[in-house]
Amino acid sequence: MANSSQLPLSTRVLAIKESPTLAITAKAGKYKAEGRPIIGLAAGEPDFDTPQHIKDAAKAAIDAGFTKYTPVTGIPGLKKAIVNKFKKDNDLDYTVSEVIVGVGGKQTIFNLCLAVLNKGDEVIVPAPYWVSYADIALVAEANPIAVQCGIEQNFKLMPDQLEAAITPKTKLVMLNSPSNPTGAAYTLDELKALGEILLKHPHVIVATDDMYEHVNLTGDKFYNILNATPALKDRCIVLNGVSKAYSMTGWRIGYAAGPAYIIKAMGILQSQSTSNPTSISQVAAQAALEGPQECITPMLDAFKERHAYVVDRFNKIPGLSCLKAGGAFYAFPHAVEAINNLQKAGKITEATDLALADYFLEEFDVAVVPGSAFGAEGYFRISFATSMENLQTALDRIEKALN
Image (cartoon, rainbow, N blue to C red):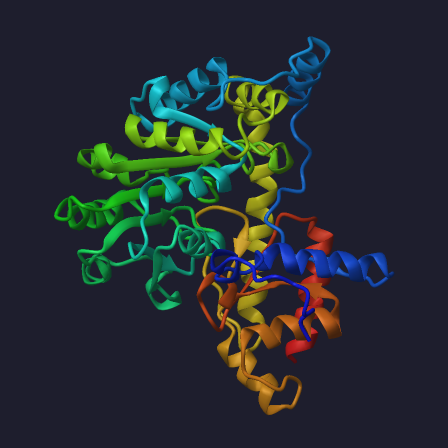
């Protein structure tokens, strides 16, 4: 029963939920602390340390006393490094006034949504989607419109689906490739087809979340919507960060590039929320972008090996079906058959992915994220950013759970 002395919270906070991945990771952590042999496959975080030259740059910044406020939208050196990165890696031309550095990729998305969305605006989010897109739209009092893109279409938004979803109220389309949670990566031709639709609707802003750009499992060249359709540049925001490529999740540095007026609005918001990102983290991020890129290779090699292993294992387990990913470090098995089998056998009471995830955690000590957290009922996500030994044990347990 609610405490009668509690005053009502805002409708804004009541409209959203805690990040399911963080909630499950916290629950798994609690069980582990109690002595249970939990294997956590929920958090999307590389299990490698931040490369040494990046840590050294941060230590040098501390010793040099670089511990004061910086410009709100990022230090000049880092912004210049981001401009150079976009030119070198993506063949995109930006000026420093078209770039903002945020406290992680999540904040840049938050700032974008609060800067461009009004009450009642619609945000098209292809599902499965990263857990925070829909909730951030709700904080901005907009309506997330989930478009189902299941395993039968390789988890990719089709041009006719996009066309059908756009209305006069559509303000923003969120694209994410390679995708969290599915690992699906769009080809240049697939993006061109989506770009053709977007060109017909000049009232729609396009956001491309490229956070997993460098976690490339196939070696195929990376493209985003701007490479495919350069004419969208005056209404496209490119979102990225150092968290995944350089194993810097805790450093909290994300960045975005786009039209100067939108970037400026995002900066105004940031000036009233966090102010600048951490000074030392910014120096570390600059070292990551400007330094040797070979540090990514050992991580990629490990992810490729683990990816091949988990996809193969999942496809041999009765009731599961799993696609190969183009990038990122997730597997997203379709589990409807397995869920139905468990319910028939009386192992779970409800035929839902939530019940499945609960069953894995409570009975078999494996933490996964249910697909419904990503707007896709009947799936679950694992992160293979953990040791091969952990993956083997976890998949043994999952296989046992489903047999």
